[in-house]
Image (tube, rainbow, N blue to C red; front, side):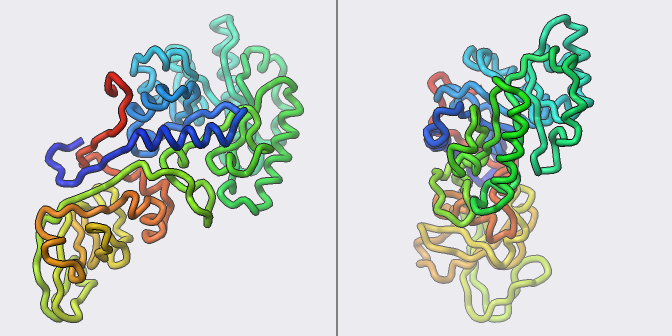
Amino acid sequence: MSEASSAKLTIDLDAIAANYALLRAKAAPAICAAVVKADAYGLGALETTRRLLAEGCRHFFVAHPGEGVELRNLRDVALEQSSIYVLGGLSAAPASLFTTYDLIPALPSIGDIELWATHARKLERKLPAVLHFDTGMSRLGIPAADTLMLSQRQLDQFDIHFVMSHLACSDEPAHPKNAEQRERFAEVRARYPGVKGSLANSGGIFLGAAYAHDLVRPGAAIYGLAPTAGAPNPMKCVLKLEAPLLHVRHLAKDDTVGYGATFRAGGQMRIATLGVGYADGYPRSLSNCGHVLIGGARAPIIGRVSMDLLTIDISALPENAARMGTMAELIGPGVPPDAVAHMAGTIGYEILTSLGPRYAREYKGAPKGGVA
């Protein structure tokens, strides 16, 4: 966090809690975990995890073991009683790191399975594990052709928490890939009678009970992103990015704005500059096409978004409604991350995870006792 930043990023932990409650109710009776990888999608893993612990969440997923170590260092009693799963498997990290910090790998390959089994034999005890199978993503996961290579000698070294796979097209309910993956996952589960299963991500929760199995793993929807493309978003917006107008000036006809002179005034205009740019994670692709809100009114972005600054057209706003120090909403309830992503030609995930460290961050709704 930078105290010198003129822009302010407010993260609403109450909204995160409400989104988690909605997902948990939707997935019931399945357990609802929380994916807090990539610093909780850019919003703060430590603060988010603390709040989700207060809401009763006891299963967390991260991408890499280092993220799991960071959570364990919270030294939270509730977290000590929780499971932290590492989606990237052993990630070439020492197996001892996982046992030292009580991290559970989702094993995505025969090689990782053998390494974890060897570590278990060395410790002379069974180790917790998740078996990750590929049912159509072709990314991480044990391919169907390799499942017969798993030996009982290896599996006997594990306390298998569940078998899992990952949906490729869950945000498109009509996509045939969803049913195909569900059927392939059913075949995988049949090989492990009595072992719990996990298939649904955020979008998968909204595909229905057939996808929920025993544990669901929402990530994006917890942070307010739409779980289903083209449908109304049932999730609450959890953040607001605001910045004050740093400079206000008038343009004459044919004056240009920004690098490359990509915007030329067609007549007299009133414009303003904000202290946010692509170094802060605000996409350069919003040049000449995005907009911000001032008092609920749209102010189009004109010229190129530069490293630290962007320029907006405030000609349509009364002078007393847009002057130096007036706050503009760049992302928030009025300009949701998914809408910003659409204007920028990307996805909401990238908007959230790109939020830079220079913003002054404020967390609303922290659990009693504060955050780490």
